[in-house]
Amino acid sequence: MENELTDLFTGSAARRLAQYMDRIRLSTNRLTEEQVWMRGSGNENAVGNLLLHLAGNVRQWIVSGVGGVPDVRRRDAEFAASGDIPKSEMLAGLQSAVDEAIAVIQAQSALQLGEKVTIQGYQISKLEAIFHVVEHFALHAGQIMFAAKMFTHEDLGFYRHLGGITHSQKTP
Image 1 (cartoon, rainbow, N blue to C red):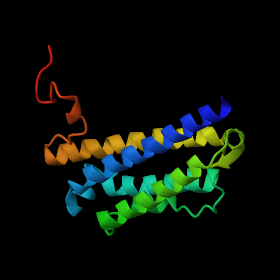
Image 2: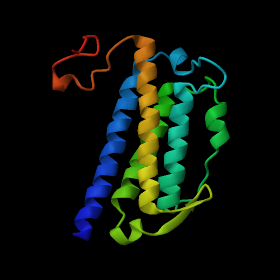
Image 3: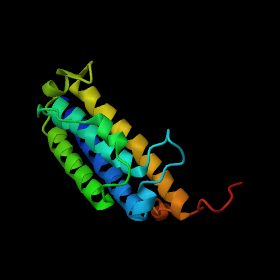
Image 4: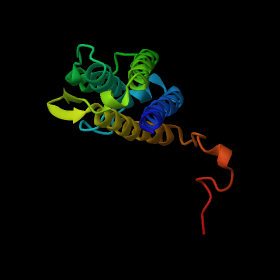
């Protein structure tokens, strides 16, 4: 039973990261290089900043924190970037981080998931670190998808398979 729950958790976390990564890629690829770096105001993050931030977060929390690889994150640089990195390069970096994270997540045993690690000064279990990253990734994926819808005025099509009412139709 313990192994089944471990596999259920790690498999779900890995699938969610992969799904959100696909949606981030599809959303970002609808944007121009200029749109990737647009901000409404100085206190907002551009899609480009979010791509860099997610890659840094996934590497720090999963690849380093859970997987034990040395942490080399430069968090301030993720938010300071302002248009000098092509979206293809950022997407490739994020995909690489996600691929590494998925491998680390899928390698965890039940015993390992319960181990305590310290990440950004927080002492948490590896399970909690993975849960945090998936949750954090989903939050920013939603922001990127919203930006893509806002800039393109298009439905992203992620739920077309469900049929029925579209966002442009009114529900009773």
